[in-house]
Amino acid sequence: MSLSKKIDFAVVFKVVNANPNGDPLNGNRPRTIYEGNGEVSDVCVKRKIRNRLIETGQRIFVQSDDNRNDDHPSLKARADEVLAGIKNPEEITRKACETWFDVRAFGQLFAFKASGGRKAKGEDSGEDKGVSIGIRGPVSVQSAFSIAPVSLTSTQITKSVSSEGDGTKRGSDTMGMKHRVDRGIYYFYGSMNPQLAVKTGFSDDDAAAIKAVLPKLFENDASSARPEGSMEVLKVIWWEHASKSGQASSAKVHRSLMVNDIEDLANILSFEPGKGPDDAGENWPRPEIINGY
Image 1 (tube, rainbow, N blue to C red):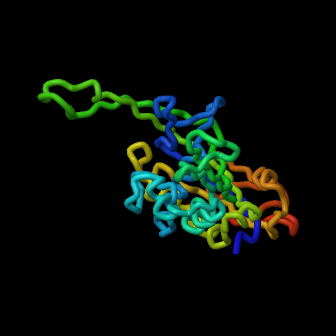
Image 2: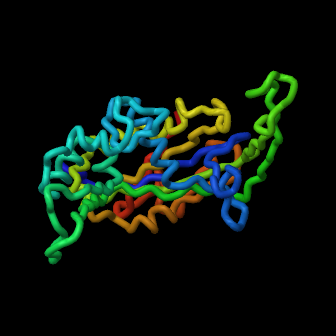
């Protein structure tokens, strides 16, 4: 059975002396917007969700090379294991959603090369044409932004060894730059749409699986850019509506939450009157507050 109720959620996390998401077009400096607030892309957030789901035993299609739990070297190889020989697009969609959690949650585009002389519709000759099958997922995740502008620090680093030569000289590769956010409190929003969940088979159990991993989004995620303990989930806010259509639009639900740039976790969240965990009315989804792991 597919998702029975509309769900909105938010995650508040803290960054201290870490690079939460480097921008490859800007020398891998932490992403920021024009006003100076920090940014973590939605792609980066979903990557971390996928990694945590892998650790719980879920089958994931889009796996990173450094966190792969099968022997497939590419997405094509992983897809071929399950979808090879299936020609019907609807059957491909059904099988992919049934097999991989992230496909039925976030969606996926499957592109196939044509074979056996199949031509594009309306063409009498020419090369075989491929086909793309797009799956639209019910779970959407926004990019994360810091509450206030962040201060960035760039440090020049030097190796203590030489990679080449006889060791008497240091090559040009021994110098580099390392960038970090000194401190920032970030937040992002997400939603789960029951209407789209019908098409992919995303269920209440799947929603519960995502809910379970959000408080520990940065566990087992350490690297030289993000040392252990430098990124921490502070709060997860979970709104479960009373129906599939929802009691309010996602925009209004998200706007009802205010995140304060303070260290006091007891007061870091505030809500519009009549929309908090203790005073929400019958016509408003009551937010559930979950502490970070």
